[in-house]
Structures are given as C-alpha cells and as structure tokens.
Length: 187
Image (tube, rainbow, N blue to C red; front, side):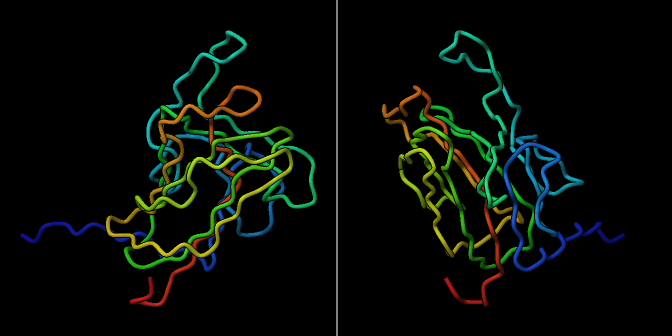
C-alpha cells in the first residue's frame, strides 16, 4: 500500500495580511487577526508554545503575550500584540506552501516609548533592538524570505541586550505582517 501523502497547505490570498490585536476588532475584509493565542492547526497560524505568565514591574503575574487596541485612523496600526522580551524570544508561525515570499512587518506605535523591537523572519534579522517613541512605527517592507518547511516563521525578542523602554519593558510590539508570494527565483 502507498503511504498517505500530507496535504499541502492552501495558497494564501494575495496579499495576506495578519493583524495583531485583541479578538473582535473591526478590520478590513480579508485581514486575519491574531490575539496572541497558541498555534491552531485548523486556523493555520499562531504562537508556538504557551503564553506563560511573567512577573511584571507591578509585582503581578501577567501573560507574556498580550493584545491591546487603541483609537486610531489605521486599524492595522491601532492594535498590537506585545511578545518576546530581550531574554525570552517567542515564535509565531503561519502555514503556507513552500517557496519565495516578500514580507512586510510593522512594529511600535503605543502611547509610550517601546522596545527594543527585535524581529527575525525565517531566521533573517530584519529589526535589531530598535526603540520607538510614542506614536512611532517601524515598517520594514518586502523582506525576501524562502519558506522551506511549510511555515512562515517569525521570532520576536531574544536579542539578549540590556536596553529597556521608559516603562521598564523589553517586549516587541507587533502590529501586522503582510505576505506576498514572490516570483520563483527572486530573493
């Protein structure tokens, strides 16, 4: 008998945008939302590993990943998931067919200084320990990546530095990513 072949993941809509923020947000049609939940195979995206509580500066245990929203004209910049600290990186995955992609990633924008934002896409460093002022964003566009294992992998945090934001935090404030299939052979 023949061995069962794994079913390949469906091709994502072009472009595919994933917003990071609390559940229930009003988003443009076709935009997916990630609220910090663990990876779900049926959904095809999410965070790898549990959202373990950490000690905060207020001497309270809170989840490491947290979703938040605020008023703003751009719904993709008006919410975020804070994840991954300088010493505790976190990984997010999206199930996609293997091949070349162009990815845009946006961080920052809270009401206070944030960071250091530290982002890797498929192991490639795209934002290195960058700080943002209140209301500021960093958007890195069209990063070429090659998916070889059926998952676009994004890792935030874990740069190991000592820099903290004004409020004493060190998490990456992830607003959204956009993914486009690149022509074969382009990098």
